[in-house]
Image: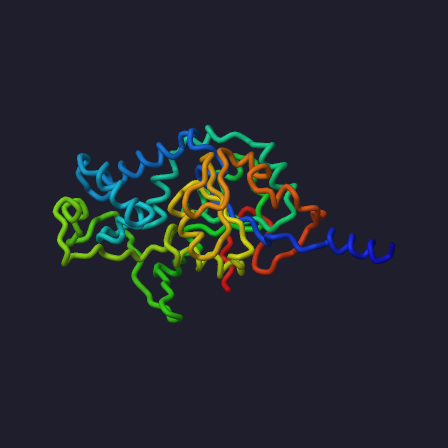
Length: 302
């Protein structure tokens, strides 16, 4: 009988499969039909015209090509030669969003708080937008920390700090909305492919770059094999899987390559991932090194 009791206790206290639940923000914690994504897209095009002097007739094609090839339009614009202040860009793009469309989500809040795991946000968006969206959703205290644009692209005293192979290289941070004298014509590049010409690289670190995901994991001190990654982007899911993350595609009912699980809504979290539903451990407050239980930027440095 004593051996059976010990076995029972061992089973009850068995370590869960995951140490951390890593969530994307936009179109993951709130639905695509909120209207924010469409507003962001329009604001980016307006910024390109008003601040960078790009012809309105080219913005649709440019944004598609930049987003497809660089992960974000911001990253692509920097790659092809445009210089601008990141804070100004995000203030323009996110400063006029219809945040009133985001409503408190008590169902999701209770669901997240019921899960006895470390929970973090990992987004390409900026800190101000991330915190505002979480507050609108009523989820600001559901996460131990945030990894956002500023976390992966730190700027100190007007200088970009980029780590390359263990060393730090500095580049002047763009401070104006004026474009450079030489701009790589990405539309022409794809209209008339030249095998001798390669796309310029971007100084911006963001998903779906595997380097960006690995850096985010390093900063938060996470083991990818014990981290469950929630994303609405298929290419981000694929990249996450390549670096060893367990993955959940949000917004789709069927799995795709790279996705271990799929669910139409974040509210189906426990139903979609059996391990979360079956974990029988008591929730407890745990102090995690390098993070704070506050919806603020996780800018810890490993």
